[in-house]
Length: 237
Image 1 (cartoon, rainbow, N blue to C red):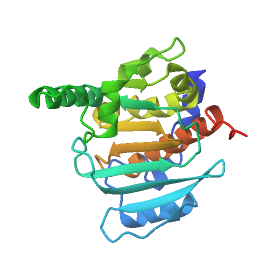
Image 2: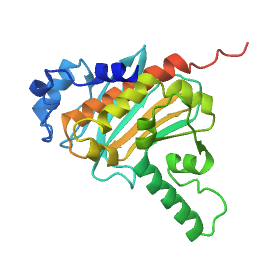
Image 3: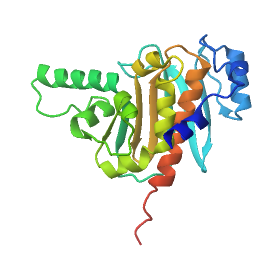
């Protein structure tokens, strides 16, 4: 099942024509053409290489922007995504690649021991606090290849099982096991479900259109999975 789904997410033969198969940094005209082809809304940005695009998934808005990094573990430009899908606000799930998990755990441990702290510092990034508070979870249906590349951390395992479903697993694996997979497997990537929203944060390492397109695919796929599989409960009467 996962192989069939992954093939559906794989690049089409026309990718070479629109720049998705190129390892060269995307140019302004290429990005503008891709935004127009995808029929995305766009907000003009003054800084070269920066952008802010958006759309809808199942009637919910999402946005993907590129700008200066807001995390120490991301160097250079950062791709940031957010989808307001109104999912279950109690669902708290974090997906991140394993090299980043190891680095953040070491950083959190050193921060606590160096300052003789006994609790998690509220000034730490949310993803780092979650690693200290929640356990990694897994389940039989989660492919071993996914567990090699990514860690899933959650307050409740059932929320993770409902969100990290086949299509999202496939979208994430396609990047780290495809072209330039070795580089992408080391590239910092965080995907969160929190407060009913989906958040994506990753390094824009090579500044290629393929990186942008993949980030958009992961964000939209994660948003759809959250909206469909973890809807917010009806309001109390």
